[in-house]
Length: 401
Image (cartoon, rainbow, N blue to C red; front, side, top):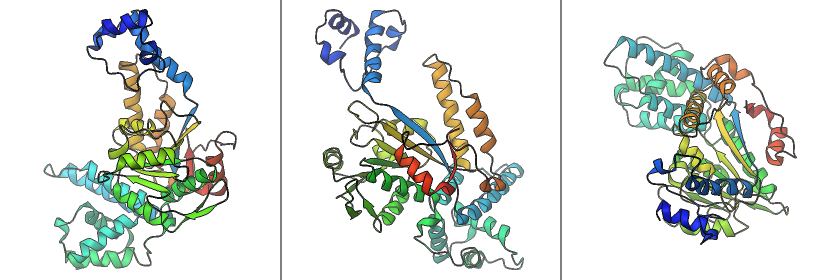
């Protein structure tokens, strides 16, 4: 409808319930210059719905949880950092060499999500007998990792043997499918277990379907306890659902999750399920990784914190401590500050947070053995997080800042 008709309905109380209270879920305003003046009645009418929404929705608490690395993750990330520095030096010396930030970030996620991903890539590269220059960044990383931890025979020039030697040396004794090798996954599953025990439902958003696959593989071997002390195994499409780009019957899963008290968990690909769906049956959400686009994370939060939510809402943002993810978080916060200044005309005081993130955004090996500020969480504040922290404080490097 046009602005004039909206103003007319608003002023004469016609269709007030539909327009203002509770109003639509989404308002798209074309020709935005017409509502630039805050003193105009049309601006006040449209602004009214936001004030009402803030009064209706329960409290929302978002916490940024900086997660330590496991022992194997620390070793791998140290080698990864060595590779990045070497790659940067090469890019400076060779104008034809391009530093690929996105590939480095992808490799970083393989280490932080679970080392199995890197191990499987190494196995695949060796089995296919690929020479070093035809293998992905992971194999270049293998070269760097190998040199930083073992004395390499200079006469050993065969690329295939070189990678195989690295496989035998660096991964000796490595066991796949070990949950303890990823503190992020340990923490995520602990939050899920405690959420179900508390009688709530939870969403887990992740950018990579491969990571969701791994989480599912661990879920299959785990049992959970409900608030009524019933013990069950996790079973896909029965007590938990999944949405990714290949999911065809997503509407059925969404409706079932919203109405069935025996469905507790939704695993969601951030790209496929962070927009356009209503999952207010859950009041907790885990953002497993940090997106390069802050809008992705913001939209994911809006799946639970929206009109229809009746319970206090808790958002857990997981960030790999002493890693590239902190740099991404800092960049996203800067984008948010810019948005507040330019679009919302508000000054967001985040200088302290930016300074802290700036100090932490550069990898330093010794930081893996230290903690930052860990906010004390009481059971009254967040029963689920407080219980997980009480049992597994060693996973936490910093909580909020």
